[in-house]
Length: 140
Image: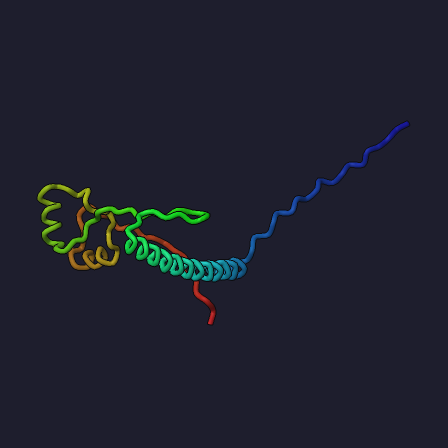
C-alpha cells in the first residue's frame, strides 16, 4: 500500500499590524487624561490626609502625647532639625570658604543656566544637552 503525503504549503505567519500614528496619539491622549484624573484623586486624598494629620498633631501637642494607637495603625510624633537659610550670601560664603559643597544639593536650574549662556556664552563645568520630549495637546 502506498500512501502519498501531500506537500503542505508553508503557513504564513501574520505579523501584527503596527497601530497608525493617529491611533497611538489618541491612545497616548487617553492615557494622559486617565493619569490626570488619578493625580487629581491623589491630590484630594493628600489634602484629606493632611487635614487629619494636622488635627492629630494639634490634639497630641495639646494633650502632651507623642504616640497614639488606633485599631489599624499607630501614629507618633518625631522631630528633626533642618536648616532654614536666612542669609544666602553668608551661607554660600561659608560653603565656599570651608569647601563644604556637601551642604548643597546638586542640581542646575535650567532656565537660569540658559540665561547665563545667553549673557556669558559659557558656564564653566557644564555642557549643553538637548533634551527631547514629545508634546501632546488636545485637538480643539
